[in-house]
Length: 112
Image 1 (cartoon, rainbow, N blue to C red):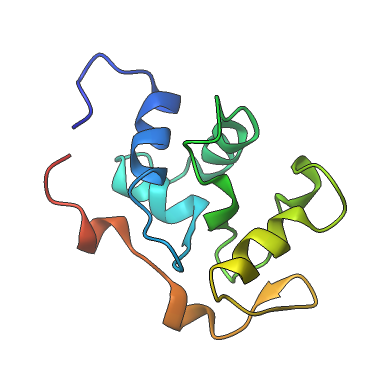
Image 2: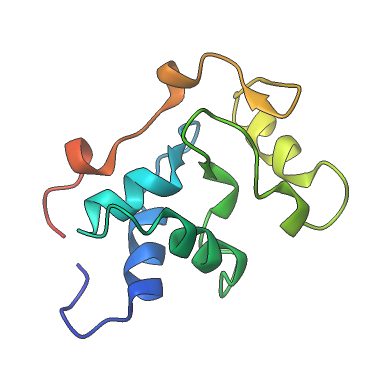
């Protein structure tokens, strides 16, 4: 559970760690869940500064399922490869059947 004195980035990482295997969420959904609905870009900055492998940044995409953060991963297609290894199809840098894979922290997290 996040504490009131955690930084915004720490709160973002806490939420991102909860995203289940084979699911994705958006920068905006995390921002909205944290009470900062207009801070999707700040969530993106947090994902770019991810402190380690325990934060599944590859599971956070833009509001329509585009892999907008893919250039922050090593290699040319690492983000896509990580998603595909979890059973998520990606075509033209966009998640196929995005709605099916979308995980909404506002609906799924209750003990934050």
